[in-house]
Picture 1: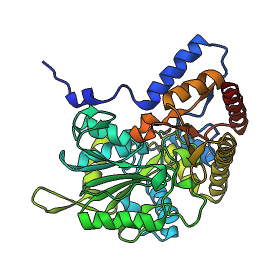
Picture 2 (picture 1 turned 45 degrees about the horizontal axis):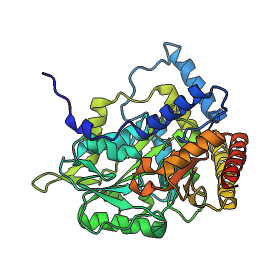
Picture 3 (picture 1 turned 180 degrees about the horizontal axis):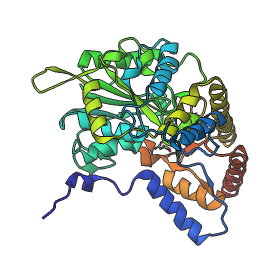
Picture 4 (picture 1 turned 180 degrees about the vertical axis):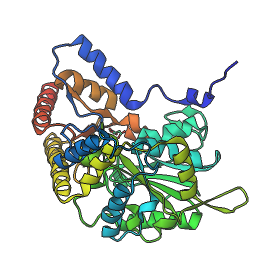
Length: 411
Ligand code: MLT
């Protein structure tokens, strides 16, 4: 008899964004005429930067000719891309990262989901609440949690991110081994200062812990005082792994390219307390389970670092930040408290009522899809997340409709 991994039975319903898509689809079927504006899942809507599409199509042309055709590439990514990433994203910002510490992949979702395979089943986990659901769900699948009760899994240290702490969790009061952090944060849009991030790095060093740092939204940072990488923080090379993505930076959600940085100095321990290189373990895992990102896609990603590419990417991100500013303005006018939207594409709105009810109201009365906060954790109760990824015209339309819907509700 083939038996299942019963940890899957502990998972809560379907994956958050699938659940939302299902609800929207049911509504759309019942109301075929409804014009729905999607500010839910953070999916980009604008075309790839021209520098990327040119490099992409050049890559495809090379694949069409025997002399320049490429078969399997290096699992870790081509040097032409890894070198550009190391130089531009790290060395230029004073972070000591070399190109062979970069693992190119097809997404930060997969990498942040898969990384937990390297660690023992009984490590102590610290996970923010609210949180990008992938970190939690993949640890549930791996059996690192107990049962789910009252909105939380047993055996996880949840780190509350609330208005009181500016949505930046406090250091754990008890020792933990693996810490997930994401800044600019998904879902709250909060950012972290270098001084605060240093406290986390120091904590990890003191406790022989490891920080998994998701920096998928770093391109949205406009405040120059904020760190864009954990490796800008002294001491992080020994205790952190960073996830980065071209998805939100350069519109690659459908094209798929990302990377994970595992410094060679980053260690974890076996049952006898002996040190092991996480770089070596991840390399082993990556080359066993992954065959690399396609050549044209890596060429398209490389173009992000060309002179034109940099200008175009900045323009792309500015466009979404301009949408975010409009959402912030409208939420303020309507009297809501909110976070994010300044160095982030997400606005985290205190909706002052049940979040799923508010989600339904916005869907049915305004035709606007948002993401209900409880989908990201218990601390998301009473919040919704609004994404700035859409056209300016649609965001404007959505804000007008929300104002009218709430006006009608209040009158
Ligand atoms: C989100 O909406 O939180 C993101 O789009 C999810 C993702 O990047 O996988």
